[in-house]
Length: 293
Image (cartoon, rainbow, N blue to C red; front, side):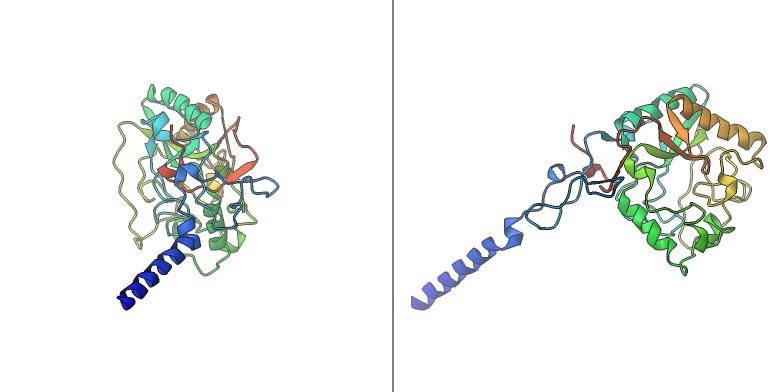
């Protein structure tokens, strides 16, 4: 009996110690209860770590953010950064799902442009939307590694990797992280099926003729998406004929809906009345990051 009592006492003491441990006292926060974390233009954290000094829960989006599909399910998606078909050759940090997340106002503005294009037999297609700061940090780490050039032949074959910062292709901040910027193209309807990229497959330059580039059901814009080349400049004089008309179609439709094009990238647009013009967010791209209705 004495040994049994001693065993019970030891077991009770073990449970008491477990209950007093930090892990037991700090259950994992649900996504809805996690803070939305953003960094202001000055670099200050908008909402910081927990006051207890413990690990910060995964950040979630402010309520102003939505999934584009919930606003307009007709807009096509080919989200590149959750895949290995990127200029890094790997999935980008922070992209948990192939989801386009934008501020509600920006998503509604894409919807307005889509209605105009549908009447002409076209559809918008998005490649990237909101981009967490951790993804931008991933780009920066990759750009500083001179030995990793696995995707050079497709995405930057005419640019020395050491020039990516100086030439403006990579930066430590991106307007995408503010939630009102999207990378967009136009697809002629009915949309042709596309195939996935196979890691290790033979690469073709993004500025090659459309029949030689990686297959994309977009209309021919003169280059592929994320092409680090001056031919990607929206008004490059070498872009003529059908390619010029296709770029004009995209820019005109989005401009009328309130978007401004980045002159160096035909696919890059920012909604002019941004909800968060000075804040860079870092919540992951995933459904669970979005506030519940």
